[in-house]
Length: 73
Image 1: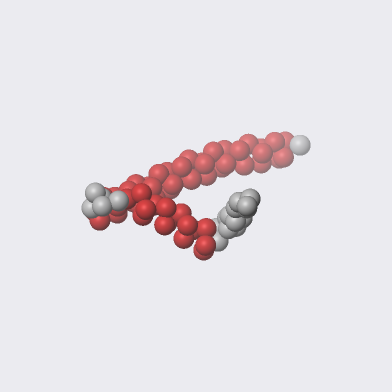
Image 2: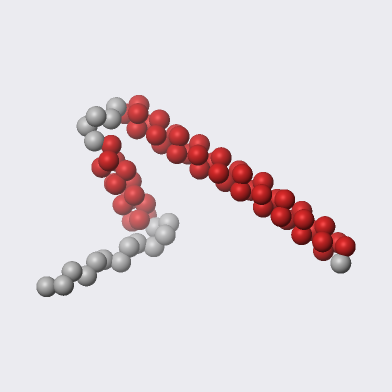
């Protein structure tokens, strides 16, 4: 019998997020304290926010550059 994998749930869907969270907690294991798990979640959020702030700053520079070019045209 041939194995046919189930299609992965759509990006951003509750099912896909539940799969990610299940995998995350599955990797925590018995050795992790709740405080360690909480720290990892906060570090992940901090990293996500820092990245997106940097991207927003870069996009702002691009937008301003484009506005200057349009005004000169």
